[in-house]
Length: 138
Image 1 (cartoon, rainbow, N blue to C red):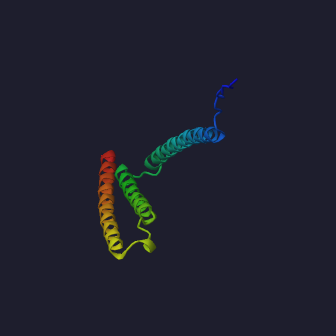
Image 2: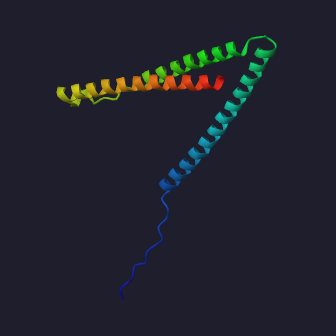
């Protein structure tokens, strides 16, 4: 008599379960992190609002001077952040040991072009940021 093989139900692999668990934990951490940053944003906004009220009423500073000071500090801090983040990005280039000189020069040319384009994007972003900040004061 021939024996028929019965298939056993496949068991979930432990690596797959572990990966799903890690993904769920990462999503949960991202939610908590988002909530934390949202709370920090509201607290600093409340602090700024209260400090502005104190500066305007008790210190006798004009609203135009306060707005100009805030616009200047926002522009300077925003520029510093944008320039710092663009300069701290690692250079993306080919592996110099495995590429011939022609491909290397083409890659360097593309990098220079993208750097120039990125600088013009930074300037446009700063101009737009300054214009929007100015509109909030007016």
